Amino acid sequence: MAQNRKVEFLDSIHVSPPPGSVPTTSFPLTFLDMQWFFVGNVERLFFYQFPHPTSYFMENTLPTLKHSLSLALQNFFPYAANIMCPQQPGKPCIHYTDGDFVTFTIAESAADFNHVVANYPRDIKLLHPFVPQLPPSRVAEDGTRVLPVLAIQVTVFPDSGVCIGSTYNHIVGDGKSFMHFMSCWAASLNNSNSGDLTCLEHSPPSISRDVIKVSADMELRFLQSYWNWVSLFDKNSGPSHGTDTVEDKVRATFVLGRAHAERLKQLVSKDVESGQLHISTFVVACAFFWVCFIKSKESATKDSSHDHDDEVYAFAFPFDGRNRLESQVPATYFGNCLKPCLAKVKKSEIRGENGIVLAAKAIGNKIKEVESRGLRGAEHWFADHSEIDKRLCITTIAGSPKLKVYEIDFGWGRPCKVEMAHIDRDGGALALAECRDEQGGIEVGLALNKNHMDEFITVFEQNLKLISFE
Picture (cartoon, rainbow, N blue to C red):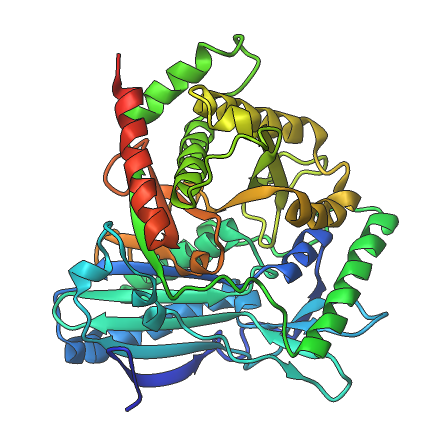
């Protein structure tokens, strides 16, 4: 069998919804979906304790894992579908035909499971063998480019653990949609042996795109950007989503505990008038890690110059619009319902002693603004994004504590670690999740070059001590 960095590939199969369970279906992409044509795929890895040999997994676990995935895809069939990308004047859509499938790969790893799931810095390439590869795009006879949506890889670490790795195209749905799918897959596995599949009926996804209202003019603006993307894709044989080298990078996970988060809320509250700003754990945690990231990067690059104190730092994060937009979007909406947000702080402010408070105010004010504006101004999102790269030093986040990734239980207990592997392609990305071991805490994954990681650890520990001071 093929070998790849201590991984042996055992099998690769196609998993579809049950035959005849889903009719041929096509539905258009909304402008909220189309903005993700310009972003790379999402790679999320779920690691579980699994004290059994590979033979046990293949004989006892794999059959039910495949069967439950098929049942889950019956409800979440867009993940087995394809994204159809016609040239101008065609409109992109998601198209499902009976027999469409998810690529499902089974592998075995000789790596040390405890080292793989550790929080301390490890080589960035350590996780790469557990990330499934999406099948390549293809071009149909009419010139339409066809993009697969989801690939799954299950890697067994004999007698120690198992990893369920996923790579999916963000165009089909956001993190909330994907975690809804994972929850139903896990629930169907836990109940398939008993024949009780009501878990798939309690919270079905809302597939209809009709709830996303948009003017004809705005749709045309987004379609024009999409057509430009298709043209560039064909010229370049694929989109480019970042070329940041991973050769010298390491990955580590940091935890901001509940007590520290509450302390940060107190510090920010002292500087904000009552009721003026919603100070959440998300806001203060993002501010804390943003400041740590900026200060450690400057230290690592030996940039102590004060000549550019008016330089602007930006923090980009997604805002979930379900039940917060002008039109009512159900909580179970399947698709993308994220609005990009950008908080800005001057360099002189963010690296000052009050930097965390000012960063929290900037993020909190942006959230308040988005809540009041809804989707107004969406026609400028692409133009704003192009200016971001030119003018600003930007830090981005992936994931959210609200996704509750540590609640996905396939019958082996809660995950012992969840990673977002794709952040290693971005030099300024933070992967956020809820803390596995402490309610109210935040867990952040980072992929940095070794020098920057060393400095980040130092700054992180220093700032923890500062906010612990009473």
